[in-house]
Length: 232
Image 1 (cartoon, rainbow, N blue to C red):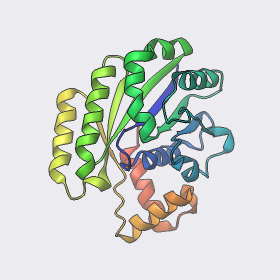
Image 2 (tube, one colour):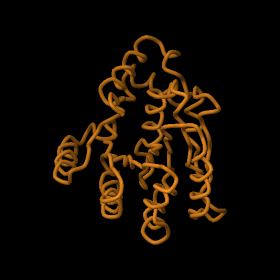
Image 3 (tube, rainbow, N blue to C red):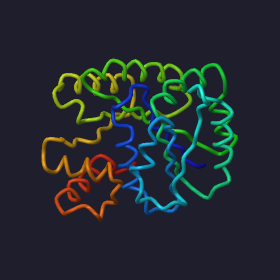
Image 4 (cartoon, rainbow, N blue to C red):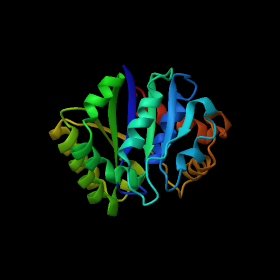
């Protein structure tokens, strides 16, 4: 089976593309990994993954001219990559695509049957933002949980930088994931006001590979990958 990793969240600005970047830093030297930008509105991952070999990166447009997610675009794209020689494919879904994905799953396509027919296993990586993004992020998580909990694995990713001033929300999220049997992970504790954090965030925007950072930011990113991405 080939593994598809859908990075999703309907609330924008919570760090989906940073999570995609970190996945790419971890796996881009593996030729069996693909990285697909499914964010038609910003194509942030396309800019941030400049270090990824062109044979391992792609852009998929799933929306029509009115901004509506088209079922056939998604199905056709998944079918097109089924013949590709890869083991893991990471998809960065934009906020508009993520927002419309639950309805497509609920009313339109038997996604589990379709995926299994192509030899895919899908994991949903749902990013949760803190502060004002927390409640909308949780609402999306709950909707997806109700839809796919019996069919697909869900991993909840706490976007740590957005929780810095809200430690009580961190504890709440961790406990709720434990009670629901959901895998809880954390990523991206990069403080923009600090030297290392600012250097890393600038490097992410520029699409730098790990070995092109200066020593301080490079060691900090290596620590991030060792601690938070050790087994993913």
